[in-house]
Image (tube, rainbow, N blue to C red; front, side, top):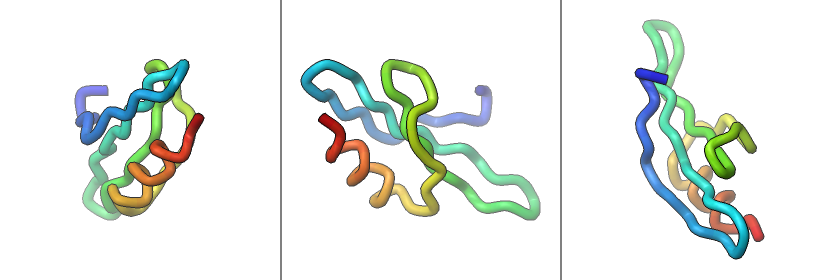
Length: 59
């Protein structure tokens, strides 16, 4: 997780959703994933705005 960077945190009614940037390598681009309460939940997304929008739609 050393290459992970928290980009946005969204608080739902019962859960905390964190949008995390996973850095790409030489031949891959950056990806964004959503973690719910610290555990993998959804993703990957190619853009930060798509990931944040998906996190905000969670209950």
